[in-house]
Image (tube, rainbow, N blue to C red; front, top):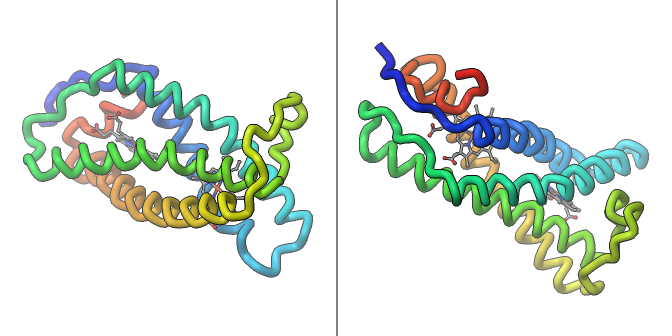
Length: 180
Ligand code: HEM
Ligand code: HEM
């Protein structure tokens, strides 16, 4: 029998799934738009989508991090062994760090490269970052490396979540799923 557990509060659940859905769109868009041989309109559309959704995500992620820092998550079920508690804490910490590094490095890469972010440009915001090829290159390298680490951790994260949902059925999935 699964334990009856206190779950994450509704804002934590909604913020998790909104950010997760966006990130799961951002990753294939980023990987596809950087491939050779794409037609110009397809590549332009993917860049437009990736840069602008990524920029909109920055304040949402900030809200999520602030909410997390001010609200402790509920305790895990007692059945979870110590090494899995540690693995969850480390991987969740890394995911939060990557959620900050990814959009910021992307933003710096684009602005230091002198490229538009159409939504901000329409709203009349300045570039905020001076043009610099070396800064753009460093941010681009960081963005690509962090993307690789993010994909690897997400593979484990999603695998673990599905294992809790479908095999162990120990209440961990319903702690996070809206509606429980
Ligand atoms: C299909 C995709 C995903 C599934 C099924 C999933 C599932 C879950 C579940 C069940 C939890 C609760 C774990 C617990 O109770 O300790 C959780 C927590 C978490 N997830 Fe995901 N997740 C997904 C995608 C993502 C993505 C894309 C990110 C970020 C890039 C992410 C970041 C996190 C973080 C940081 C936590 C810890 C929440 C906290 O304690 O504050 N997840 N996820
Ligand atoms: C959570 C947010 C983000 C995720 C998960 C993400 C993911 C990715 C991935 C997987 C790639 C392909 C790997 C690579 O070549 O670097 C990529 C490339 C790229 N991303 Fe992002 N990205 C995010 C946010 C942003 C933002 C906010 C911007 C700009 C405003 C941006 C701009 C770019 C650019 C320009 C590239 C092409 C590579 C380059 O020219 O350096 N990304 N992104």
